[in-house]
Amino acid sequence: MAMSNEPGSAGAAATSHAVLPADDAQRAELHNEVHARPTARIRVPALVVHVAVRNGDVSREQELAHLRKLPVDGELRFDDGADNFLRLRLPGCTLKWERHTEFTRYMLVQSLPPAAIEGVAEPELLASLSIDPAWLRAIPGRTIVAIKVIIITGPVDDPAQVMRHARQWFGGRTVVASLMGQGHSCAVTDFHLRDSGFERMLVIAPPGTSETRAGRITARLLELETYRLMALLGLPVAKSLQAMLGEAERELADITAAMEQEGRSEQELLDTLAGLAARIERATAQHGYRFSATAAYHALVRARIAELREKAIPGTQTIGEFMQRRLSPAMATVESTAGRLASLSQRIERAGALLRTRVDIAREVQNHQLLAKLTRGQELQLRLQTTVEGLSIAAISYYVVSLLLYAAKALKEAGVPLHPEITAGALIPLVLWGTWRLTRRIHRRLHLTE
Image (cartoon, rainbow, N blue to C red; front, side, top):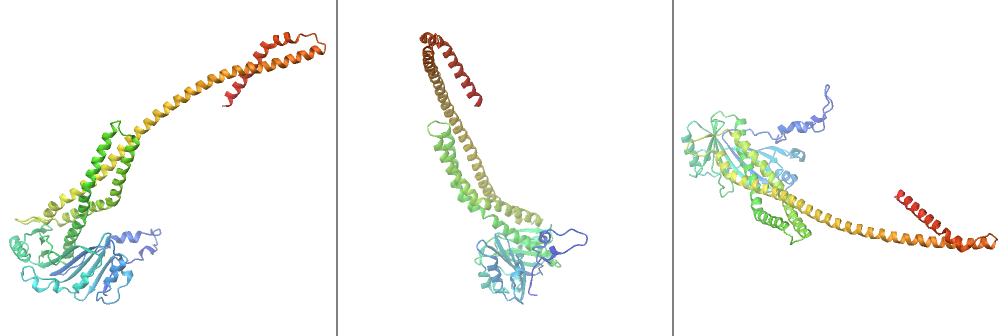
């Protein structure tokens, strides 16, 4: 077949088991993830051309459409890329396609041109590709990594001879090299971009090296360089934020200092602090993913370096040592910037909480003063009400006594021996007492219903 899509059966999730409950809907997918991107089998000597492009604005359909332009034996079906992995067998070579979250990798494996083995300095390799270089140039996306790896057989027990051969192949440049797996193979590179846009790596493996081991060695080296460059994507972002973070820290310091003084209002300070918080949160939302991704890629770089199990060659740095020395300052800058961003957000939150506390205290003082004024007003109102009640008792008593006077006059006219004025005057104390008692009773009932 012209193509293969690994891992295997996609219908395993629907399989019924005689002694097991029904499968979870994601069981097969999660189980087969361990087989999602199998390591290539490489027959030594070989030329490996690896290109990784950023795929943020490129769909999987566009990449598959570009793969269909290759001279594959048979039709490339859309479903073949369901797992974001394809291995295509082409005339004279094999091409592997892997789509990741942020980048897509293309790895071409073919036999090594004889001219590259003869100790030529800086040999031309692109002219010997088994596919049209124009197809590589038209890959959708923007190149982030491009590496040519030469894998040859040879003795690795004589490091001096290995380095002489390597330096000649790299055109006399300064190189870094490692004995991998505690000495089962040797990797050499100079981490330089050529005019063609490619880096170069040389792997020397002893005769009899298996195809799977050659594939694993190549995969680790290519992943190491790919993840290194993906991790470095956070460095320009970190540098671009330095000026903004410095300005924001100074502004926060000014706000904090103003909080100790009485010249500016709390509302003005809150408005300024809210604007500063908005800028920091916007920067966090825009670049938080990039910083997290950088930390994840850096962790993968360290893991791949550990997997190389390097042994130093006298007189040169190992690949891992060179990479960590050159990569660590950049990663420290990114980590420091991410930490400053998070710390600044927390400090703004604390300053805002402190300022809101001041506003709450000032508001409570104002409320207390207002309550005191209301209490004073209620006291005056109560006094006025008491005065009014006294007048009301007198007025009610006057009208009651007047009614009693008319009643006494009526009785006198009816023949009752009464003196109306004397009778009314005698009843005045009783009327006053009764009116006062009635008023008190009404007050008590009103208080009980409150």
